[in-house]
Image 1 (tube, rainbow, N blue to C red):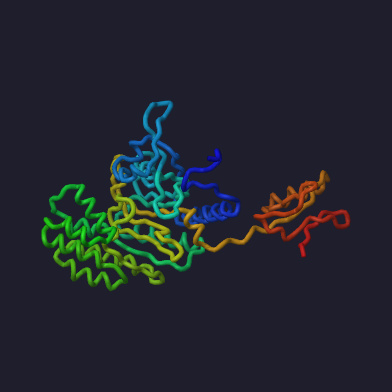
Image 2 (tube, helix red, strand yellow):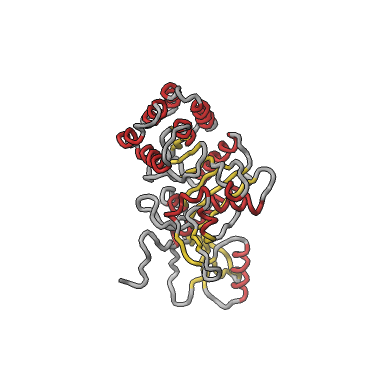
Length: 383
């Protein structure tokens, strides 16, 4: 085996894709900054008990682990940045009011989380802490939509769900946590046979409600049908109204609803959204409300947000044009050097052709050249 082969689902990012990814990264961070989100840069690794405590426990199997040579303690390479951002909000910043944070950096997965996915996503995300009202949910979704639109995504739909529906249906049901986990898996897989078997001993209202929501997916009409089908559990009605209200804030977006959707990280505590595009088999963006995520760090306060993988995003957005550049000859002429330096300082890209080499440039569009005209170095258009 070649010594320079990379591990499965790990790949180098070559110039064309790297350029596109970097342009997307800058655009996403600028969009978040426009909403007032502050950038944080959590470390790639930290002590395992910090990464996997509380809501982070769901990421145990996805987290690479190693031993710290300085302390002897077990470290983890982060598989998601939400837990770290919650730690920063609760433990380091500890502000009294609203805190808006965003981040962008690599995460590592022991297994790809979807077909043909990388195990080294470049995760961008934004979180808003300190507001329990639906306004935070609306802002998180609005920012997510502006981010994907700014990246060039046009044909998309947003699927809404809420984990409280299942929680309300299962409230008061005495069941082993392992069985409840299997119930969640059956709901996510829409496996009616497995769900019926697992809920045989459940109260009638809970069992019938769980089986009913397997069929409750589609457009906004589903919410009306759900009110009728789940009327035996009155607490569900408010959740359905919240979903309807959230969708109403974005009349130009195509929404669907899947009331049994429990996919994604288990730390979600309320409304969840997932953005889909035809070119991808899995969600491009996932987000929602996760009010419990900071509790383990000593500050249990409301939180909402979203995240996406820029490497997945770059595969579904239109290619961006090459940056215009100026071609210049290589010379020791002081005047030429001064002109090149001035152009670069003004923001231009100037590519010097080295002696004996051709002037091919792959990732820049050289549409002008520096030519010596009447003793002056002048920028001229290339024909």
